[in-house]
Image (tube, rainbow, N blue to C red; front, top):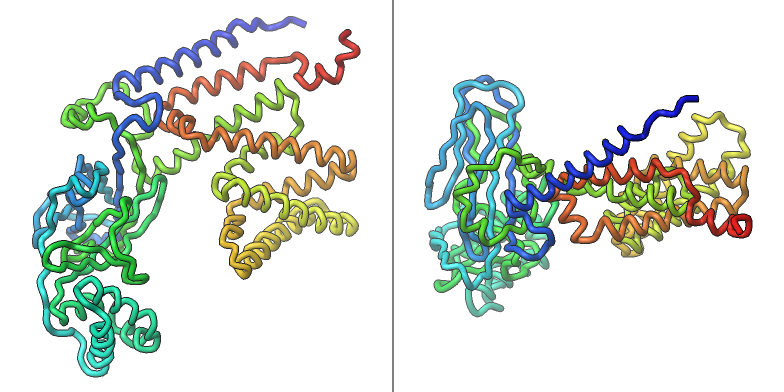
Length: 503
């Protein structure tokens, strides 16, 4: 039998490695992307995604947008709205992005992206204008009476604007019946603003975005901003907690609405957030970034919602590389080929200890149920379906039980891939019947060990930084997988097994 030359294969390996390393170096050189995380300044990239249904009429969509504020400096803003006209307007002291088009039909999607440099609160010179005071409640009759009672009780236990705010929020939390009655007419924050104004304290409702790396489809939270004549303080109207956290950005802090839409219906706005570390030199020369180098191969050009998705997906090749290395070169046996990678991804979502405990509990309970099903001599499809339903029931039961016991961490068990767990239970059960419990323990132990190694690498900050910022490394991973797939010699564990024979 004629053997094919392996030269093209090794040329392909060399091509992948050289291309991958060249793209990686080019991205570092041309875009000044650092090799390691933590060397640069923190920049939050936030993308607002606006969706609505157009009715075949002229469209005007106006979105409230933030500017520099204590703790954050505006570095740049971008929009994506094909076919739409766009302008930035000043209205009532606030900024708005305004899109317009003569005619549009069907689902419309508009993007607004902003880059905010994180600063110390003391460094910011920004002073927002103080809000106006309205000395009269909008609602009258029994609502006015009930609200006035809350204000009177809070005033007795307060000394200044900020203490009155805390006591007023406390009244809403303790006087449940009165609070429920008032909330039938308008939100808690609106009542708080009106009552504080009635007490001659300047306050307003603001919308706050909590910044957390990798968050998608996030909504704004309503907060209360109170002015005592010298400074502003932020209050959580639900808990009364005072102060602005370092990861809280004021998105809307004027009296206008978040989104005004003319010519469309069913509008909604949600936000995606991603954290980046940008070199100081790059921040100083941001105007030059409009002249992009011709070869910008990165996922940073995608919308932020897709970027956050890819941030997790790009870690999968790292887990795959671990599986290939430990199976082909070391000789570990696992349950399923890439089951350990899926377990490692689930561990990232659940945290390691919760994930390990949940995996063992679900698989153990599943094996017990599967042993009963095997006695019924069911057809394969029906048996697999029954196992899947059993896994869902087990996960639901553990979630409810952990919630009742006050163990909120137990709710994370729902992140496990249920279909994969069902197949794992089925494979282990068959293995138990054919090879015995020892082989099951070997394969489960091997799967968990590989998943742990993959988890450690996939949660490493350096690995996450490199895979997200240097797409060329994926070609290097591909080359390494192909190279290991070409190996036909003994595994490391097989050397130990045949040690006597080799002598």
